[in-house]
Image (tube, rainbow, N blue to C red; front, top):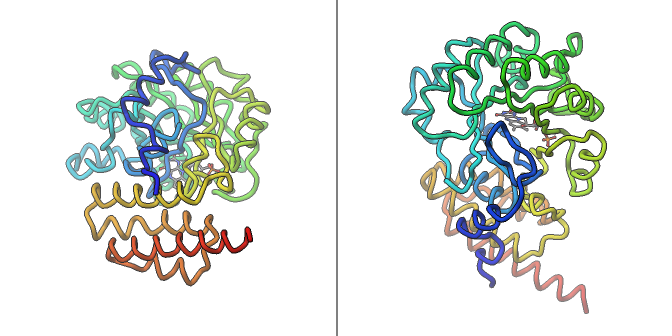
Length: 344
Ligand SMILES: Cc1cc2nc3c(=O)[nH]c(=O)nc-3n(C[C@H](O)[C@H](O)[C@H](O)COP(=O)(O)O)c2cc1C
């Protein structure tokens, strides 16, 4: 079997290749060398997954969102969410909250870890976040957004950006909020083309992304419903956005950042990726937690590989990595044999 190193470039190669290219856009003074970016996803975009996606072509790295209050009050407990590799740069720490002073204290506190960018989450629709006035709750409160951006951009050495939604069904404030972010020193807007009420279902409205791109001069990242490589180009064409952010479609298919649809990825590459992703999980979280947290990734790799449900269930219920790997090898060997049979 081929080594994973054949598919994933080394950190040194990655940096050397980027240094030779022209940036696609800048976040204030931070160059970004690509136009496809892994979305921040709570429970998914941790160091193991982010670093693999970055090596496959995701142009920058966003952490899962981190509550500002937790950074201020329990910084040491936030260490895992804030861990990253040098090669992930530009590294974006995404924080959430509704209190400008607390957000500033959190952003100042994390400066010792040298992120390249601080991003404010203004899109999360979860009740417990919105109830605090944070996440998409901020899109009802333009004045608070202005205060947050004014305060943070004046005090921080790094650029400050925002990730928003359309707004609420009865308060589609996207254009106003995007302008406020820009007028108060913000350096980039990422926009997910859905309302709070839509959550993650229904169709994303790409016209809204185009409207924001036309309304501001800072770079705009478009997001929502990008499922295939063709969608990346379609969203760029439709909106003129500077880059495209991909969330759910990257789970089980990190190769989308190399502009490969899942059916184009050879079985061998999938096999090696599952192994490498698991290895990073175990190294990062330890065996027990690593195995448990890996299940949702494994499930999606295996589903997209069209393994039967019984095989998938048997694999993802393993607590022991060695047992999982034996089953994985067996499943891929069986697949190889069945492909040979089919070809006869
Ligand atoms: C499980 C999950 C967790 C998410 N967590 C975050 C988060 O921490 N911060 C954030 O800005 N957006 C978060 N999002 C939203 C995504 O970044 C993205 O905007 C959304 O999934 C739409 O993109 P997609 O259609 O490509 O998935 C999350 C989405 C999902 C599905």
